[in-house]
Image 1 (spheres, one colour):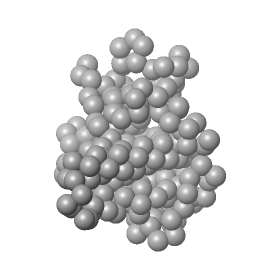
Image 2 (cartoon, rainbow, N blue to C red):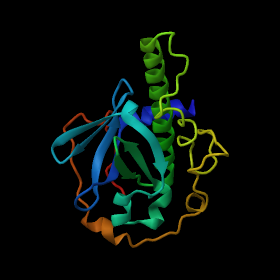
Image 3 (cartoon, rainbow, N blue to C red):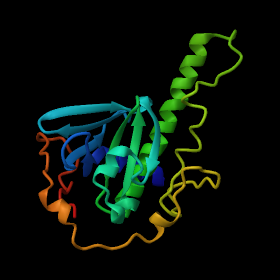
Length: 203
């Protein structure tokens, strides 16, 4: 049930701080498509899409090169990256609770899409192919494990090589958040969010 609630929250959408290859991070509206297969967001006036079956893994924390340009160590437990096609989608949520919801929902959906794609490829290959181990999918159970502490909504994998211990337990508090003062908000078209209560107030 907890995962279902997380997926429902993703469909309603939220403003997430998106790190890009150029320029400073900016808040963009993100939501999950109704068929649960595509992540949709607006950057400026342009609508962007990322098919979840193209994502090879979801990685907690701020480990990518793009994150390192504007590191926010106090936001470590609110951050994650989607890895796809030699690129990354690097995001920070407004708090740890929201990060857990997005991580749990996306982890489940990415794993599900990989399983579906793997079954499709198996059928297309026919019975002559005795193995079903696409390189991108064989490691899906490990990198998709949740790093955000111990919650009922997520399964823990003790062997997860990507688990980050200390940053997610008690992140340092920093009330200044100076770099957020210059962050730009992207305003989505009317009806982008499913719930009118979707808030853009992220600190």
